[in-house]
Picture 1: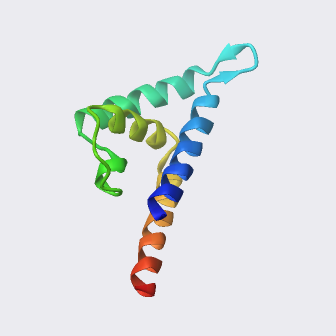
Picture 2: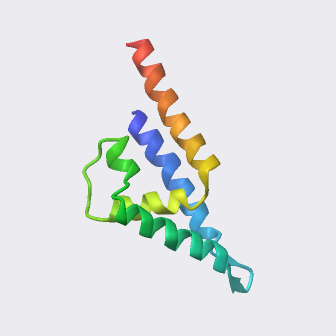
Picture 3: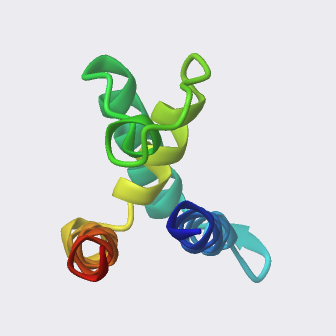
Length: 96
């Protein structure tokens, strides 16, 4: 059940990030650049939040790209997401 909630949260975060690419009549070059750099870094360093923290089966590069999109939001955003995942697992351990 926790994985479904986490995937839902991550999916919304990815969608909201992608929506920031276009502003009114033009594209946000800064947002596109941040996404491209983050995705590139995640592929090079093989960072995949979906397999690392959630233990989900990895499809080649998809997890890296999605993680890159999330990371492009910045460190505060990632800190909050990881804190949320951690607290869900901690509360599960306590109730078990």
